[in-house]
Image 1 (spheres, rainbow, N blue to C red):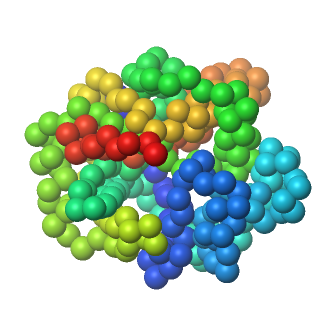
Image 2: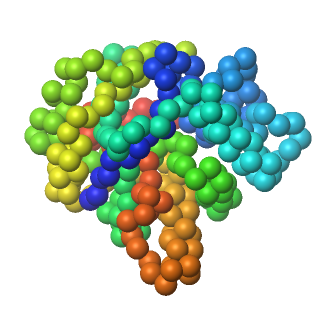
Amino acid sequence: MRLNPFRALRPDPAVAHQVAAVPYDVVTRAEAFELARGNPRSFLHVGRADIDLPEAIDPYDPRVYSKARDALTRLIAEGTLQRDHVPGLYLYRQTMDGRSQTGIVGCVHIDDYERDIIRKHEKTRPDKEDDRTRHVLTLAANAEPVFLTYRDGAVTDALSAPVLSTAPLYDFTAPDGVRHTVWLVPNPAAWVDAFRKIPVAYVADGHHRSASAWRAGTQLRAGRSDATGTSDSDAESDWFLAVLFPASQLCILPYN
């Protein structure tokens, strides 16, 4: 499968703990509102922009997506989010209750999704797909990664070890007790090459996000084809954000 470095928009390390937010779809509007209360840097203002509009407004109203775009623009303008100068990959570790899992953050390709190289195990709801597709297209960005897993081996373990011995870019514990640690990968080409030898990955979480990224990417590709008469398959919008965790590190928890 294909893995690609990308120029991330990422937080100033001094305020990363204020930006970090739970996934958009694990909280209600009321819960998201409370989590972001008094914190204009919270990424929930982007992922759940309905919290910044009157409660009576439908969460799929066009004003919600415009508000999300405004919030992202504001976070960039004020320096809370900063664009990397060169494309990169990151190692991302989550630690909870004494257990850790460390994945590689990069971009994966919509063609791999379509060809079932990225494999799914859930059906999706059209309304939720429509929502995140509009979100991606309005922001021209993937606001959250898809959680993928793959069958790991000695090569990826060997690539990870020296990176994890260096100082991280970010290391903080969120209010829910989960510790988040992120390292910049110094040799992204080696990871790209290693993933060429990995035949498939699986969507562990994010079926709606991945379906929406595919829909947005194919829609933008069709627009390029109409405009130029060609349908290139390596535009930035053909890739979507993912974090790929090794299967050997995962633990299935009860959903209750």
